[in-house]
Length: 140
Image 1 (cartoon, rainbow, N blue to C red):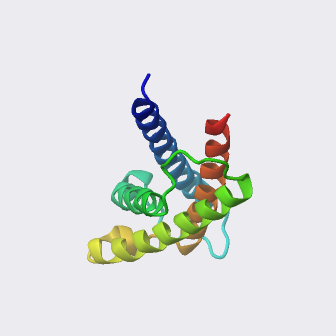
Image 2 (tube, rainbow, N blue to C red):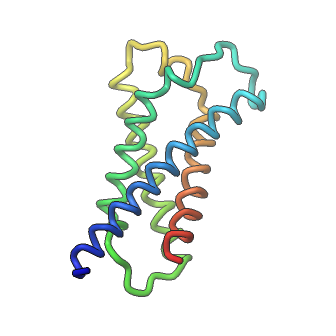
């Protein structure tokens, strides 16, 4: 195989793993928020399917932040600590942009009104953890 083909396959597989990690993090955050009544109990339980638009916005912005942070190029000798740092930075920027964009996109929708703030924090933490783990497995 040519070098360019290897880079293309590497990039597509890494983007796919990141998308899966973001989706799994969002779903895990949803179920964790449903099961833990902290800081308050949920007053309005919304099904997960109503959050699909918000999930799509989150995936797009986190992947874009990873791309602009040059995380989809083949690294030379990047340590796991550096990779973790870049993942934290990209996920944080992408998550903040996705939440602020979702507020404008879904302003008149019930979805954004019922979106728990604790779920935002859970999704952010789970995305960092899952993306770091999947990237570590991808390198091996």
